[in-house]
Length: 514
Image (cartoon, rainbow, N blue to C red; front, side):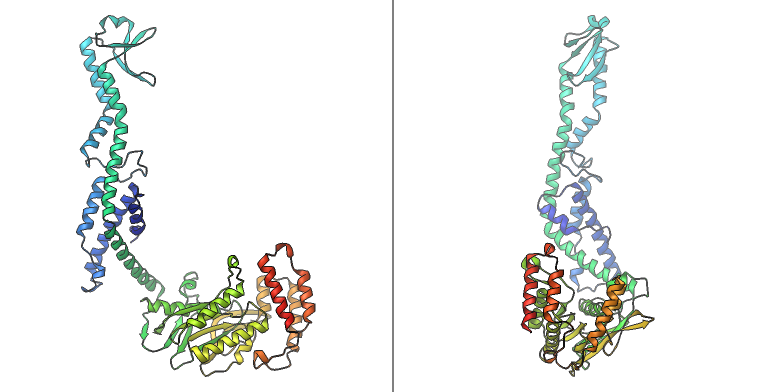
């Protein structure tokens, strides 16, 4: 497989008359390896007799290979103006020109020997310069022996230079033979490329065939190397994954270092998992690995898990990460809401949804309300299988028969936190945001101030939270104080027009609450 090149790309170059000799050589090598690949598959009996898409007639391919093998040199030029394209033996005309070019010295030597015999000038020489070309040089002492067919060209102190009609003919032939070789090779190459072009439908079929084999063998290879298992595909709406792993993250870690996790979702179990825990604890990895395992199972691959039973899903929806689209004037939060809206309008009860930090791009009250309402909508109306990761711990108070609270396990020791990367039952006790900030290198003065503010804010929480829209939390500072402080600290010189409008809009919304 490593010797098979991108046949689809090479075919496109041939179709556009842009393929050079090395492209045609690549096509030949690729076709040779495809035939070998087909023979291996037939001998191994991997595919059954009725799987016609994994077999083909090699005869048309062999004809094309034979054409390219007999014509294109093994290390050809990629330019049509340099020659060095066509093999010896493919064209008699071209071979004749090349023979003439390679034997030019021999031809001139034979002509000189004939002239010496005719005129008896033993020291007669053929020389060459860029001004007059080839010439016969005769010393002054032998001028009396010069025959009549010699034509004087130049007189020097000790010798004279002559030419003959035959020498002029030879010079013309020798000077034009290189040009004839280039023209002939170019013409032959274009005819060969045209014949390849006529076989493009065949080449494209072979490209598709090889791509499917490549895909299957790649999945088989990684399944063998990484210890994947064959999933059981269920007819129901249930997903049960034991010791699931993220196929990409796992590949970048030393063997055995990735922490596996289980998942039971849908069917007779809960269909909505609310996952809490601090940043860096592994929430996003857990969400994505399970979506990937479902995707891999449905595409026919083995999966990174100890055991997997996968019910068919009609779609997989992902609302993860943070990105903006400034070219369209869309903020990060607007992009997030667009993606969320698409999910809520499109997903079905057979879908799998993973959502990470919905509502985090706006104020706490707005974001929490949106996250709460989205969760309720999915639980009550859509009933899709959902993994919902959030930092809003208030959401863990949401109750529904199909909702299950999970969290990423964390250990705190001597003021430091250890992320165990393990999913456990129940909600997270706290967010550990300041601890994560310390790991990131935030200055200690800032961290100390943050801890004091956090203590004050937690003390002011006097009312137990039930519904986000009915929660009237007291602010530590007045709205006007906070807005004035933010305006004073804003770096106007590094603010885009879109960002400025977003700030103003947010300020207006904040002030409307008071």
